[in-house]
Length: 135
Image (cartoon, rainbow, N blue to C red; front, side, top):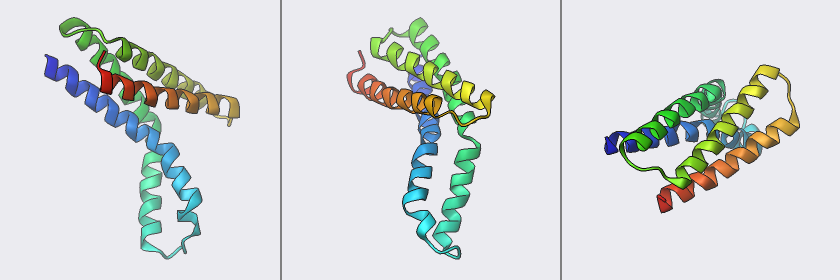
């Protein structure tokens, strides 16, 4: 079961990584891609990738949250409880809740957006500490 727990953790990280790409891909688009001519093949491919990631951002985040819960349950039942893992999971829950609130409001609320992004940054730091230390 240890391998199952690790697999769930890796899949959670992959899905959260795909969700986080929403910000990265928009940033790259604003800085470099928009400056390319419309006919540029790379721009067209990039925009297709960007549309896919933006359209599925919430599904990646929600899927990651579901896998994270499964990961935590498997780790608690069959392995050991990691303090850094619990902190990371709590930050992931906060991130998802903020994302759900923003999605339900359907409005651009800069305070919620920055809270969501701040939670993501804290989540990334906590995740790195969790993976590196495993305590």
